[in-house]
Image (cartoon, rainbow, N blue to C red; front, side, top):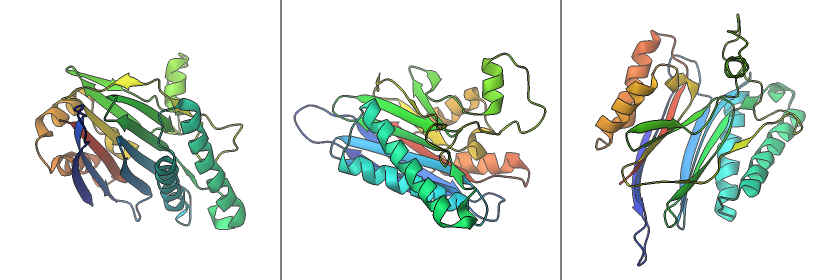
Length: 254
């Protein structure tokens, strides 16, 4: 599935113009447990991507709940305030915990989430994330990672603990954990410029590309409405028949 939309604000002050392209593919799995969506709310754009896990379609339930609840909460009260965004994520987590308790088949469901909040009028953005779904930001010929994975591998790298022998992609926090264990990262606001682009993606996509490759792909494909399709097809071919679910949201600032 691929969706492209182009929007701009109104008024005397020239707002940022942007295009959004989103796509999600099952890959070589039996089902797609990724969910994604974006919404315009006045001068705001919010993009949400989630990568679920858990048996009996629990991952799909968790990721859909994360995306839908986050979009609805933001629509009701659009903001870039860190404490309010944090409260939205905890609301999402509370709903997942309630579903776990109500249905024994959903006990093990969890999901990552990453959120991009962009204000066209102020030309500022904020990123929120839990887990290892990523947000990349290309600006001034440099690719910046606006998120850091909540994975055992990343933790060991940060703490100079070498490489894990097993479960390299295991997460130490995700939605579906008790609130006292949940770790949510909210970035400080940062400036967005004309010519920038963002990529929100699940690990099924980013694991197949280096940062340098993403720079070339995003820059070369920014004028191509099929850009998400090209990136997904390349990732699937590199997976050699073992592709995870592949999901991305590309935001091009014109």
